[in-house]
Each structure stands twice: as C-alpha cells, then as structure tokens.
Amino acid sequence: MWNKIYLAVLALSAPITAFFAYYSWSWLQSVGDPRIAWESFNYDRRSGVYFLIASTIVLLLVANAVLWMVRTAWALWATHLFFAVFAVVLLIWLHLSGITFCLENTVCQSPSRAIGPLLAVSGIVGLGVLVFIDQFVVIRLQEKMYGRSDENDQEKENSRPDVAES
Image (cartoon, rainbow, N blue to C red; front, side):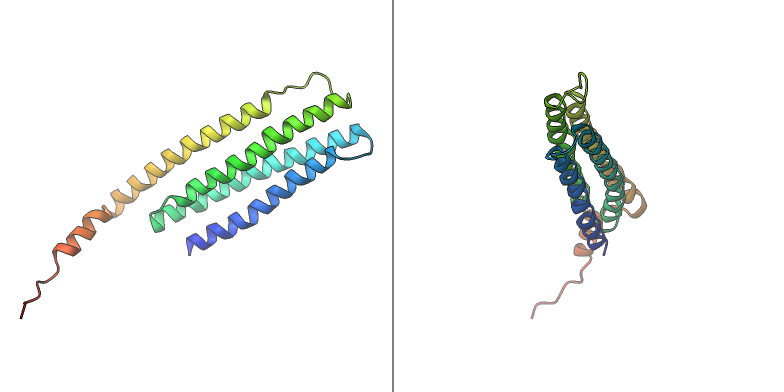
C-alpha cells in the first residue's frame, strides 16, 4: 500500500514541477515587454523551486514509511533522483537561460551565473547524504525495535520439523 501511495504522490508532483519549469521557460520566449517577461520568469521559476522543495519533503516522508514498512529503500533514492532532475532543470538550465535572456534584453545588471548551479549541486549532494544517513538510521531503528529479519528467516528455516523419509 505504501508503495502505491508513494507512486501516487510522485505521479502528482512530477507533472506539477514540470509545469512550473515549462511555464517559466515560456516567459523567456515571450515577444512582449522584456521586463515583464523577466519578472514573470523569476516568479514562476521561484514558485517551481519552492514546490520542488515542498514535494521533495513530502516524498521523503512517504519514502520513510515505505522503508519502514516494506524494508526497501527504492523510494528514498527515487526521491533523490526526482530532486536531482528537477534541480538541474530549474536551477541550472533555466537559470542560465534566464541570465542569457536578461543580458540580451538588458533588464538586469551583473547577474550571478554561479548561484543557480551552486545551489543545485549542493542541494543534490546534500540530499544524497541525507538519504544515505536516513536509510541507515531507519534500518537500524527498525532492527532495534523488531530484530533483524535475516535472523528471523534463518530461525524459521532451522526450526522446520524434519519430515520422515519413507
């Protein structure tokens, strides 16, 4: 059940984040006033980043439930992949496209080209470390509460009654 809940949240989060990315990119293709396009681009890209962070937190919470109940960490690493893909799109590709638009249309003064990629890389690496530590902690806590599943499986296998051979 938790796998399905996780997949439903992921299936809802990915298109919404992709919509924010597409909508902000579409402002860069605008033929209207460049200042309005620049402000709208920044607003929509920022909204996409905020939604990405919020949805990643929700996905991590559900992924922890998946790890606790099912004992597989695939959902944690899928969350990391989700964050990494959209961080690259929103914070590297769109950021650099926006800076190019800004300089070509002279709507901003000396923008920082490095801040988006630095935030993306540090976020991806930081989340990867967090996911690894989280996986380790949740598995250890579960082992302390319920014991190791490997030991339980071996005990069941060893405790089978011997069947008399005829």
